[in-house]
Image 1 (cartoon, one colour):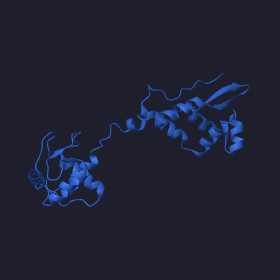
Image 2: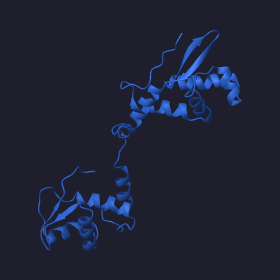
Image 3: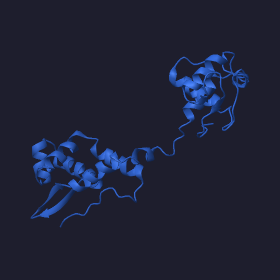
Image 4: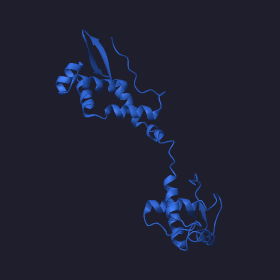
Length: 203
């Protein structure tokens, strides 16, 4: 009798489904078994002889692969013949490369934690910066933080921008230039007004 196995379905939690597949493939012999079954259906005894491992070990591997929906079994005389489930494998591959899948598994992670840590590391108790980060990634985190001091939709003169930035560090020229370079502040021509780009605040 053919054993029915179900591949990953949309109703399963994305993370759980991906973990199950990755665990099933996290073994050299399981990958070899998939390769062999892609050629023809084989029994546990045949796979054990070909791979040079015990039948009980093969059965364990097949069980893990079956749970992930990658192989199925069909009764033949006194033993089961195992075969690859190519449609399930294709469905899993499509699921993995889908644009929305991988971002979804990280949807509950705080993406702004790095920025907050950098800002904390470079800030004094009064909120001023100890220094301007030399490392680009850390500088960008600090710049994103500083940009929140400017109200969306409000135009600022260069003098006003400097007054705001001076609260954090005396080198206002560098901070102002970096904010514009990072496209966090926009500037209208030479010596014109400044304004903050409207986007979600990370703090």
